[in-house]
Length: 232
Image (cartoon, rainbow, N blue to C red; front, side, top):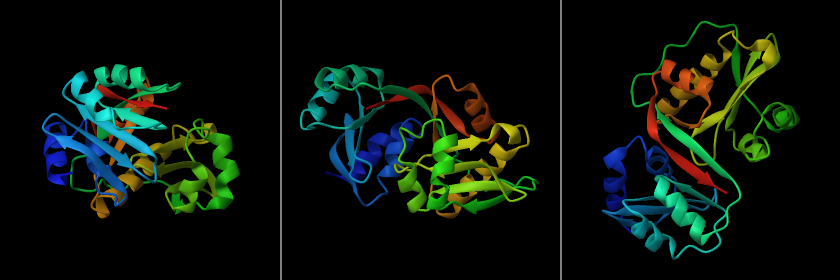
């Protein structure tokens, strides 16, 4: 399938499709379907299908070749209904895309926090303190060097990372260190790291997470009104 066709369709709404546009840059992403009516991708390392379509009929046709998917990310509400008719998913998570489209790095905020990469020795700590640890394979992220911590006086005060499909996330600040700007320090670090690597910093905010929404907007992210949906 043509990468040019896929990018052309997805670029009509870059914010809504930022996850699909970024995962296309990964070598193990396969374009299963691409036309002026929709795109269907599959990323092997994540085991994730991503779909966007102009209408339900197109979505149904594209999904007809998919067999026993573990995860599908939809980008239109009607795609949710189409997916649920064909497959049995128990978990549904709606998220809003947030993307930082500016090219200039953010100024590093003044803070006593020191950012350091986290290795596998921090796995028990992250499993204890990250609320979605049962969903995300934290160990794999630690092994790949995708997790970073903010340390104050040698103590781990908070952490952030990059999900396997390319989005920023896993942000957590321990209760005793909150309201000290640690979240801003961590996000600023990761945004600037993405920019230095030539990537578009983006995150997916679970619907209803007002605190995260405000943080992204404060840092200059553009947030989508339309939600995407993870079906698992």
